Image (cartoon, rainbow, N blue to C red; front, side, top):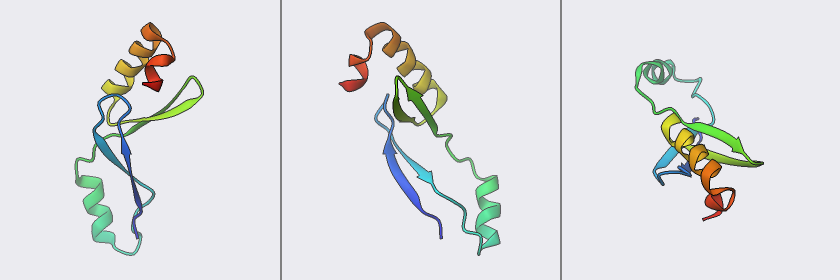
Length: 76
């Protein structure tokens, strides 16, 4: 059984799904997962808080805004 959690990108607000594992009982699903274009989810720890982003661009932009506006940016 595959368990997935839904998160919201800290930068753009897009919903992303993070899977906890692969269904080992069904080899067809595992092969499909290896060949499908799954989005790359990025999890970063910034200033002691953990954030989830839907891609590397959002993570980089978030870090840049955080550097300019400070930690109050992340709280808004």
